[in-house]
Image (tube, rainbow, N blue to C red; front, side, top):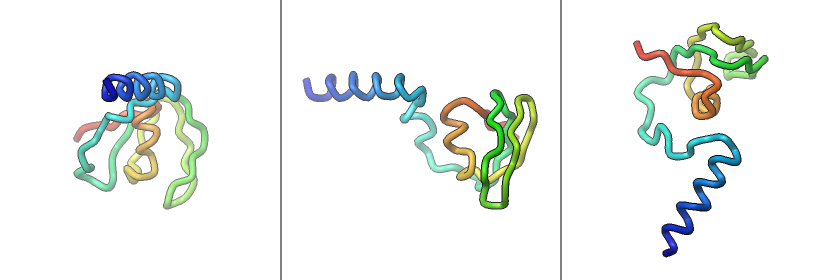
Amino acid sequence: HLFSQYDKILGEYMQAIDMDLAADVKPPKNIMVEVRVLKDCGEILTESGPVVLQKNTYHYLRRSDIEHLIRQSFVEQIDT
């Protein structure tokens, strides 16, 4: 009973914030990743400086700088 309540609450929360908290639970293999921008994100600050993420552009960035955008489906990792 407790697990089903937790699962329901977690599902509602993930839907409310539009993020899958269960995605990509394995540690990343690479520190740097190539991504394609799916939605305009504007300028983000990365460890190496600001980057403008415009739809349909490609970037090679530190995964830690854009992990949240991958989880929100604003960018997708390009498998190489």
